[in-house]
Structure formats: structure tokens, C-alpha cells
Amino acid sequence: MREPFFAANWKMYKTPAQAREYANAFAPLADKFRERAAIVLCAPFIDLVPLREELRDLDPAGFIDVGAQDVFWEPEGAYTGEISAAMLGGESVDYCIVGHSERRRLFGDTDETVARKVTALLGADIVPIVCVGETLEEHQTGRRLDVVAGQIRACLGHLSDEQRAGLVIAYEPIWAIGTGMCDTPQGADETIGFIRTLDGGLEDATILYGGSMKADNAAYLCAEQNVDGGLVGSASLDPAGFATLIDNALRGIDGASA
Ligand code: PGA
Image 1 (cartoon, rainbow, N blue to C red):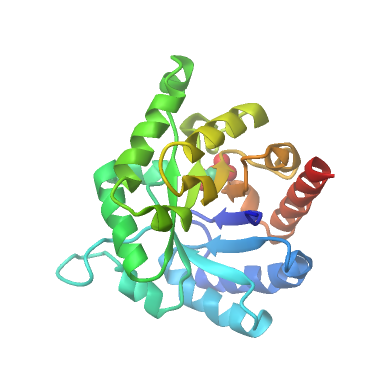
Image 2 (cartoon, helix red, strand yellow):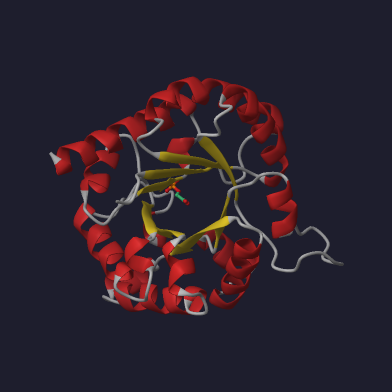
């Protein structure tokens, strides 16, 4: 049984002080999800240590995990501005987003560099959250599944079945990110179900939907059989709002299995 999984993607929001405030507001609200779901807060690099420190006190059992939003694949060296997987792992970072469409579009990430980042993360015992998804044009011309298949094979083809089974993958149609234009539950389910058939191990991977998931659509999306949860951007920035979204999503999952 795959566990429901919710990842906040804060993007470039929140100072270290705001990250601490968030942790203090969110931890008591999230307590009721313990045993029910996995939750990870993916924060800017500079927030990771304060967030981890705060959660260590608020949530000593470590139920709420901390994640980064990118990594560089080399272990160390003359790479100005970069952060390695070993550095993240040394600070008890559990997860790391790679291949987000904003990084692909604005910072030159490609399937090839995403594959290298995935390898580096696995070597540091950090679970990659690998993002894939098609553009609006690719969507409108019926190429959604082909595009996603190409990304999955290029980013994850070098892994063993066992490694793939331990991944988190986020299907995020680019046209749905930050636009309020969420995919239909059927579209998300079909694409994620298709990803599960692409290669060994993916059947058991945790696969999320991302792109304008909100408190009012999370239940419908997460009720779908193949959708394990969400990678949530703007709707994760407010701690109470994110808790409500998770609550609604779990109700959707319960309703679907009832
Ligand atoms: P959104 O972002 O929820 O604001 O659409 C999701 C993401 O970019 O991961």
C-alpha cells in the first residue's frame, strides 16, 4: 500500500524567520496526519537548517520531513553558488525536488542533468522528488503521454527497479503550474497510471500530481487510484491552508476507498 504523500514547494518564498514561524504554526495542525500521510516541506536552501532545528523541537519523532528544491551533482569543488547532495544529507535533509519545470525553463536543467542529480541524491540517501510534465502546446496536440514517457526514461532509465520503486515522482503539467488551471482528476490519474507502466519499479513509486492543487480540488484529485498526493506550490505557503488541503485530500482518499 502506498502512503498518501504531500510535499510543499515553497519556491523562492520565506526568509529563515518566516520558515521558523511556519513550522511553529504548521506542526500542531499537522499532528493529526501522523500515521496517515507523509509530509515534506521543500524550502529554499537558507531555510533548511532553521526549519530542521525548529521541527526537531516541535516534532521530535520527525514526522514532518524537510526537503530542498535543487542540488548539484558533484560532491564538492569549484562550483560557485552550488550545493551538493552530501551537504544536504549532512543537514538531515530527507528529500530534494529535481527537474522542476521552473528550473528546466529558467536555469537550463535538462533530462540529462536531472538524471545526474538523481544519482547524486541517491548516493547521499536523499529521496529525489522528480518532476515531469508537458507544455500547453504539447498537451493540446495530444503529446502528453509521449513527452512524459521520454522524460521518465531519460531521467530514470539508468536506475535499478529497486531504486525507481523508492522514488517520489511529481507529474506536473506545466500549463497547470501557478495558473489556477488544474488538470482533471481523470487526466492526472491516466497520466500517473501510465507512468507506473513505463519501467520496472514505477508501479510502487510514490507519484504525486502537481499544478494548482488547492484545498477545494485536492479531494477529487487524490481520490483517484493512481494519485498518491500532491506537490503543492502556492497553496502550501499558508500553514493553515496547507493543513486544510491535506485534510480534504485524505477525506477524498477515504471516500474513494470506502
Ligand atoms: P502551484 O505550483 O501549486 O502553485 O501550481 C506547483 C509546483 O510548481 O510545484
